[in-house]
Image (cartoon, rainbow, N blue to C red; front, side, top):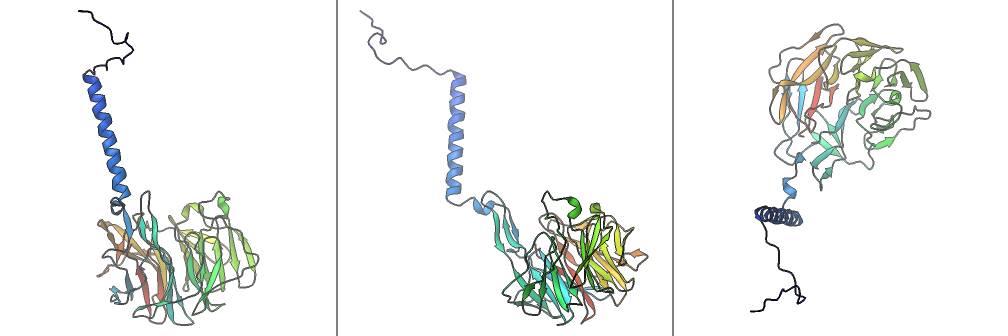
Length: 359
């Protein structure tokens, strides 16, 4: 019989046979393709979205308002009508209207992942009358740049919110209004490449001298409601914390800032550092009845996966102490793993008020 080679007839060459290694490579390739197609289909149907980490107050957690009377903390009853609830809020006592003003401007629901981001941005003003929070409609709100400070300016007789670049808004009892400050110092924006010596470290109102005080690493600026003045010397940048709030200590007649390593006092012409316990991320307030500074800080030894018990510290101008507390506030953990809630003295009711967010 005559045998003819198929190549000579112009036909296709026979397919090469796969050895064991070839079959393994082919199987891996098919398996990988199958997985990629499944993942693509999963996302196209939106099935994967709920598995993205979600942070916020959409669950069972709720914000709590606590009061301190010098002996113990008390959790205020939860309001059926709701209240402020995000982890980005500042507040101050409005002496003119005898209420606490809180501006809630955080993200109440943050979704992580490729399709994530802030799904619910809060921008609300709330008033506390000693019993409940009431939402107050306002046509305008402050502009948040970094974490700011809320304080009461007795010269203007209004609550002020000052952001991290020194811009200010005043609350007149019904709405927020921008405060013109001609000649204000230029401050570095958080996260920018600006000169670090222009970064704002602390903000407070010096009640004794009735001036707004902005402390930078090398200089300090004061504003009397009409003009700015500059003084050499500031607060060490290494002592800066996320919260720039400084409180006025009426017993000392000085403004006080709680730094990461030291406690700083301002006497109207210079800042002085004082030793302190490890109070990083603590919340500072002044109790005029007991004439002492009050610091609330999470107790790292008393935390679970969602919250920490708070620990109380006081300073009488000379000595730090941590008195025992029967009912310690619960401070929820934030996305960074810590919390730094706002606290202010309620002059109308004679108690410190601490707002602990839900997220």
